[in-house]
Length: 158
Image (cartoon, rainbow, N blue to C red):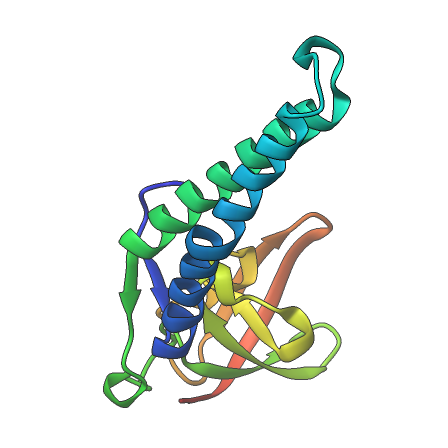
Protein backbone atom coordinates (compact mmCIF):
# COMPACT_ATOMS: atom_id res chain seq x y z
CA UNK A 1 0.00 0.00 0.00
CA UNK A 2 1.32 3.43 -0.87
CA UNK A 3 1.64 6.25 1.61
CA UNK A 4 -1.02 8.26 -0.24
CA UNK A 5 -3.86 9.71 1.78
CA UNK A 6 -6.99 7.62 1.54
CA UNK A 7 -10.22 9.61 1.87
CA UNK A 8 -13.01 7.71 3.60
CA UNK A 9 -16.32 8.28 5.28
CA UNK A 10 -16.63 7.80 9.03
CA UNK A 11 -18.55 4.56 8.40
CA UNK A 12 -15.77 3.11 6.24
CA UNK A 13 -13.11 4.14 8.76
CA UNK A 14 -15.05 2.41 11.54
CA UNK A 15 -15.45 -0.72 9.38
CA UNK A 16 -11.69 -0.83 8.69
CA UNK A 17 -10.91 -0.36 12.38
CA UNK A 18 -13.34 -3.14 13.36
CA UNK A 19 -11.84 -5.47 10.74
CA UNK A 20 -8.34 -4.80 12.08
CA UNK A 21 -9.49 -5.45 15.65
CA UNK A 22 -11.05 -8.79 14.58
CA UNK A 23 -7.85 -9.83 12.83
CA UNK A 24 -5.72 -9.03 15.87
CA UNK A 25 -8.09 -10.30 18.57
CA UNK A 26 -9.60 -13.40 16.91
CA UNK A 27 -7.76 -14.40 13.72
CA UNK A 28 -4.19 -13.98 15.04
CA UNK A 29 -4.71 -16.20 18.16
CA UNK A 30 -6.53 -18.79 16.02
CA UNK A 31 -3.57 -18.83 13.63
CA UNK A 32 -1.14 -19.35 16.51
CA UNK A 33 -3.27 -22.22 17.83
CA UNK A 34 -3.30 -23.87 14.39
CA UNK A 35 0.51 -23.70 14.24
CA UNK A 36 0.82 -25.14 17.76
CA UNK A 37 -1.55 -28.01 16.91
CA UNK A 38 0.35 -28.78 13.71
CA UNK A 39 3.68 -28.64 15.55
CA UNK A 40 2.46 -31.32 17.97
CA UNK A 41 1.88 -33.72 15.09
CA UNK A 42 5.56 -34.55 14.65
CA UNK A 43 8.44 -33.91 12.30
CA UNK A 44 8.18 -30.35 10.95
CA UNK A 45 10.17 -31.14 7.79
CA UNK A 46 7.40 -33.35 6.45
CA UNK A 47 4.41 -31.69 8.08
CA UNK A 48 2.25 -30.10 5.37
CA UNK A 49 -0.30 -28.94 7.95
CA UNK A 50 2.43 -26.96 9.76
CA UNK A 51 3.62 -25.40 6.50
CA UNK A 52 0.06 -24.41 5.57
CA UNK A 53 -0.57 -22.91 9.02
CA UNK A 54 2.68 -20.90 8.84
CA UNK A 55 1.77 -19.65 5.35
CA UNK A 56 -1.72 -18.65 6.51
CA UNK A 57 -0.16 -16.81 9.45
CA UNK A 58 2.16 -14.94 7.08
CA UNK A 59 -0.75 -13.87 4.89
CA UNK A 60 -2.74 -12.76 7.93
CA UNK A 61 0.19 -10.67 9.21
CA UNK A 62 0.55 -9.08 5.75
CA UNK A 63 -3.16 -8.18 5.74
CA UNK A 64 -2.88 -6.72 9.24
CA UNK A 65 0.11 -4.60 8.18
CA UNK A 66 -1.72 -3.41 5.05
CA UNK A 67 -4.83 -2.51 7.05
CA UNK A 68 -2.78 -0.69 9.68
CA UNK A 69 -1.18 1.34 6.88
CA UNK A 70 -4.56 2.13 5.34
CA UNK A 71 -5.94 3.27 8.70
CA UNK A 72 -2.84 5.36 9.40
CA UNK A 73 -3.22 7.12 6.04
CA UNK A 74 -7.00 7.50 6.22
CA UNK A 75 -8.54 10.94 6.29
CA UNK A 76 -12.17 11.05 7.36
CA UNK A 77 -14.22 13.38 5.18
CA UNK A 78 -17.29 14.99 6.72
CA UNK A 79 -20.11 14.94 4.18
CA UNK A 80 -21.50 18.20 5.61
CA UNK A 81 -18.39 20.15 4.60
CA UNK A 82 -18.26 19.06 0.97
CA UNK A 83 -18.16 21.81 -1.67
CA UNK A 84 -20.61 20.91 -4.46
CA UNK A 85 -19.51 23.68 -6.83
CA UNK A 86 -16.99 21.23 -8.30
CA UNK A 87 -16.42 17.47 -8.36
CA UNK A 88 -14.49 16.38 -5.25
CA UNK A 89 -14.15 13.28 -3.13
CA UNK A 90 -17.56 12.02 -1.86
CA UNK A 91 -19.61 14.15 -4.25
CA UNK A 92 -22.22 12.49 -6.43
CA UNK A 93 -21.85 13.54 -10.03
CA UNK A 94 -24.33 12.96 -12.83
CA UNK A 95 -22.57 12.80 -16.18
CA UNK A 96 -23.63 12.30 -19.77
CA UNK A 97 -21.45 10.38 -22.21
CA UNK A 98 -21.26 12.78 -25.16
CA UNK A 99 -20.97 9.93 -27.71
CA UNK A 100 -23.80 7.70 -26.50
CA UNK A 101 -25.92 10.36 -24.71
CA UNK A 102 -26.20 7.88 -21.81
CA UNK A 103 -26.49 9.52 -18.38
CA UNK A 104 -25.12 7.93 -15.20
CA UNK A 105 -24.56 9.05 -11.63
CA UNK A 106 -21.43 8.11 -9.70
CA UNK A 107 -20.20 8.93 -6.24
CA UNK A 108 -16.49 9.71 -6.19
CA UNK A 109 -14.95 7.76 -3.30
CA UNK A 110 -11.61 6.52 -2.02
CA UNK A 111 -10.04 3.36 -3.34
CA UNK A 112 -11.27 1.17 -0.44
CA UNK A 113 -14.90 2.21 -0.98
CA UNK A 114 -15.09 1.86 -4.76
CA UNK A 115 -17.88 -0.45 -5.91
CA UNK A 116 -19.17 0.04 -9.44
CA UNK A 117 -22.34 -1.97 -8.73
CA UNK A 118 -23.24 0.61 -6.08
CA UNK A 119 -22.31 3.52 -8.37
CA UNK A 120 -19.15 4.33 -6.42
CA UNK A 121 -15.98 4.95 -8.41
CA UNK A 122 -12.51 5.62 -7.10
CA UNK A 123 -11.08 9.13 -7.33
CA UNK A 124 -7.96 7.38 -8.63
CA UNK A 125 -9.73 5.63 -11.51
CA UNK A 126 -9.41 7.16 -15.00
CA UNK A 127 -13.00 8.50 -14.92
CA UNK A 128 -12.63 9.67 -11.31
CA UNK A 129 -9.37 11.49 -12.07
CA UNK A 130 -10.87 13.06 -15.17
CA UNK A 131 -13.92 14.36 -13.30
CA UNK A 132 -12.10 15.74 -10.24
CA UNK A 133 -12.28 19.54 -10.12
CA UNK A 134 -14.81 19.84 -12.94
CA UNK A 135 -17.83 22.10 -12.51
CA UNK A 136 -21.42 21.77 -13.71
CA UNK A 137 -21.60 22.07 -17.51
CA UNK A 138 -17.90 21.31 -18.04
CA UNK A 139 -16.83 18.47 -20.33
CA UNK A 140 -14.19 16.03 -19.09
CA UNK A 141 -12.02 14.32 -21.68
CA UNK A 142 -10.92 10.96 -20.30
CA UNK A 143 -8.32 8.72 -21.89
CA UNK A 144 -9.69 5.18 -22.11
CA UNK A 145 -8.18 2.08 -23.76
CA UNK A 146 -10.48 2.58 -26.76
CA UNK A 147 -9.67 6.30 -27.13
CA UNK A 148 -10.76 9.58 -25.59
CA UNK A 149 -14.20 9.64 -24.00
CA UNK A 150 -16.06 12.87 -23.31
CA UNK A 151 -18.41 13.28 -20.36
CA UNK A 152 -20.48 16.38 -19.59
CA UNK A 153 -21.00 17.13 -15.89
CA UNK A 154 -24.76 17.64 -15.46
CA UNK A 155 -25.13 17.79 -11.69
CA UNK A 156 -22.99 17.70 -8.54
CA UNK A 157 -24.57 16.81 -5.18
CA UNK A 158 -23.63 15.24 -1.86
